[in-house]
Image (cartoon, rainbow over all chains, first blue to last red; front, side, top):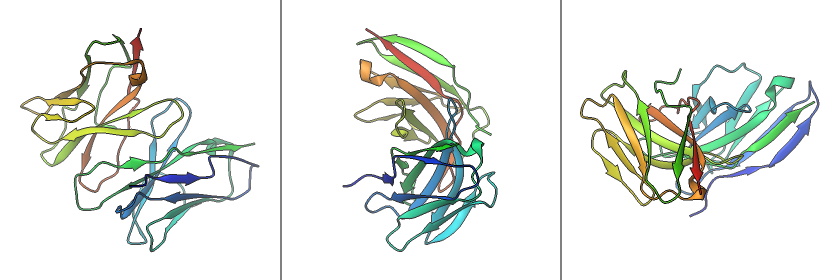
Length: 113
Length: 109
């Protein structure tokens, strides 16, 4: 079975720009979540998608948005980038309805300059 | 906010059992205890989870106290590759994972 893959692995953007990060979920998984991890901190939940709809959101502003596609892959979009958006962005997939663990990707390292 | 309390750091000698404690005194009846670890600059890796009973898999054992207010993750024979940050998380089914700051485990040769 394939795991969770994220692209790109690294990205440098300028303050004010927009960015799109991509995630392919693990085979058989129908739910995708996104997390932001600042340096030295634990991952923080951004939002979760199930059946192509957002069904849970953390304490992040609306300029953080997402999509889930019919094949369960997902995108995270961030508009009007700020310096504090510099972080490791993690995608995790799981199966809704069970007590299974999440499978995380290796993340996208975003640097905003 | 995270519902768990873990020591900030621990050391363990290579080849010995590493025992990582976690307090979750406010856990409710339908919340699971999950353990993940994160090796530098990689995504968190699932280790094990449990509800009431002790659990064991190829990576580790999870011991949950009878009152469910605390648990211990046991790595039976620690290797250098087990050096990582270990996160203990309580989670309802289908709910998000709320990470704390975890325990930084260092395996000493």
